[in-house]
Length: 379
Image (cartoon, rainbow, N blue to C red):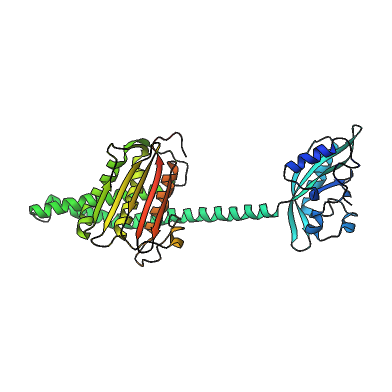
C-alpha cells in the first residue's frame, strides 16, 4: 500500500522526499499518517521489525506499533506537527515479534494542501545497530573507568607499602653516613652515598608514578619546554651505567650532528624514554647490544631503541600498550611494566605523537615513538 515517490501527493513532496533520501533514508522507510496517526501508507521496514503483515499494519496507527512507554512521545510529536512544527524527530521503541522491542528513529513532517495540514509524512529508521554500538561503547567506557580506578588504587597501595620500609632504609644509611655506627672507610662511604642517592631517586619515582596514575587520563596541562632529546636520553643511559656494565651490554647511540630540540614536558618524556630503555636492557641477553637512535625528520622527531632479545609474536604486540598489560612469557613480571607502557603511550599521545613496537620472534624488538618538534596546542 505504499505509493510511488511523488505520485498523488501535494506539490513539493518529491523534493522533500528527495531531501530525506540524501540523508540516508530509503523509500522503504517512508510512510504517511492522518491527523490521528493512523497509517495511510505503511513503511515496508515495519513488516520486518514488527512481524505484522502489510494488511495488518494498514489497520494500525503509529501508537499501536510503539511500546506503551513511548506512546506519549509519539502523541506529543503528532500534536506538535498539528500546531505547526516543521519537523519532529524522536527515538522510540517499537514492537518486535522476535525481540520484544526494537529501537527506531521516528521522523515526522506535516502534509500540507492549500495551506492546511491534513496529515503527516516521514520515515521510520532502524537504529538497532547504532544503539547496540552505543551500548558496547558505554560498556567499554565503564570498563576503562573501572580499570583506571583499580590502577590508581593499586599504585597508591603499592607506594604506601614500599615507601615506609624505604624510609627506614634511608634513615639507616644516613646514620651510617653520619658515623652513628662507627667510622667507615672511603669505599664504604662512597657506597653508602650511592645507596642514599638511589633510594632518593626511587622515592621520587614512586611519587611520580602515583601522580601519573591519578592524572594521566585527566585534562592536565603539560609543562612544555624546549628540551634536547639527546641530553634527555644520555641522562637516562647514565643512570643505568652500572647495570649495563655488569650485564656486558653494549649501547650504541646514533644522534644527529646538531642536537634536536623538542617542546615537551621534560619529566613526562623522560618517563617514556626510561620505560623503553629499561625494557630494551631487560630483554637483551648478557653480552648483547642495544641500539638507540634519534632521527630529525624536519617537523617531527623519531626516537627508536632496538634490543637483541627474543622478540615478540604479533598477537602480543597488539596489546603491548594496553592498560595493565602483562608479559605472558615472564613469571616474574609485575603489573608495573604494563602500567609503564600504558602511561608511555598516553604521554606520547598527549604530546601529539604516536608510539608503537616492531618485533619478530628470534630477531629482537624495536620500540619507536614520533613526536612533533613544536607543540601548537594541547592534545
